[in-house]
Image 1: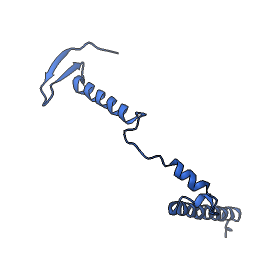
Image 2: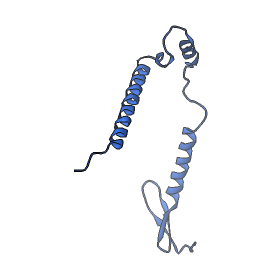
Image 3: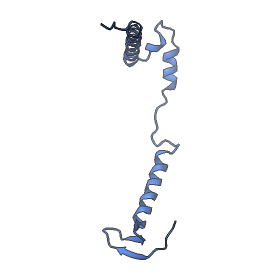
Image 4: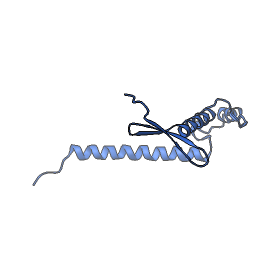
Length: 115
C-alpha cells in the first residue's frame, strides 16, 4: 500500500546532493539509488555483451589436427600432462569409491553379533 509523501528533505552530501523522501517512516534515497542502478545496468550490458573485445587466436584447427592424428595414443590422454593427471585421478577415485562401496555393503550385510 502506497502512502503519500509527507515531506521532502534535501540532504547535502559530498560530491552529489541527494533527495531523501520520507513516507511515513520509510526512507528512500532516490538520486543515488537511480545512479547506481543505471551504472549496474551498464556494467551488466558490457559483461554479457556477445561481442568480444579481445581478439583471440582460433585454436580449433590445431586441436582438431592433434586429436585426429592416428598415433596410437588414447584420445583421453592426447591433451597433455593435465589430461593424464585428470584421467589417473578419475581412475583412482573410481576404483577407490567402488572398493569402499563394496566394503560398506559387506559391513551392512554381516552385522556384528550382539553378546
